[in-house]
Image (cartoon, rainbow, N blue to C red; front, side, top):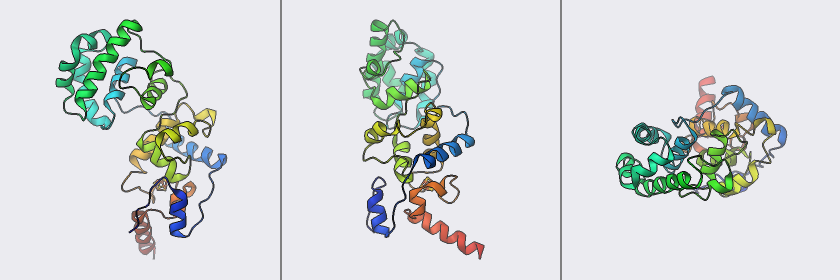
Length: 248
Ligand code: SF4
């Protein structure tokens, strides 16, 4: 079977001989409203108690699950809950504590370095400014936006793998790369949703619009989703057929 990339809706539709429908602002509003009604006050699933711990947890979560990060952070934060103590703990000790997660060597190096910078340059206060955050080791655009959004309540939308997938599948905001979507999405989200849109879409991707087997049949926004309309997913098609058989 020809492999179809999620992000290429035009290719999907042409392969299936269907027309994509356009995602206008009313549909985007409806999607966000439905996701908000489902979970009005979404929270990060990473455990943290201050902005510095959140920053460390988000750095550790690159290519790792929140669950795996939450397993190592209690020990890490018990020994170092602020930049000064993390800097003193040092790269090697950090690596020993976080060794169960992927890329632990480079992550330990980055945590030790960023802690030293925040201690020396920012007097132990995590900067609440995008340009300063992305200068820290191990902190890219996504991490900076998560920290600004979750720790400082700013209306930023970081695009991770879940958000990238949901945006392309639904047609909410199409793009070939996460950065591409990140650059466009902020203008497509109405102001009232900007603070929580990151979590609304992320949680939908994590629990319903999953990478391998999206639960299209039970998805609350399937009537607004381009992939559902075009029956993009074989799993989805099979389940729809099963459903129609059981109805007969
Ligand atoms: S209908 Fe399927 S592809 Fe569309 S958002 Fe829902 S789970 Fe994802």
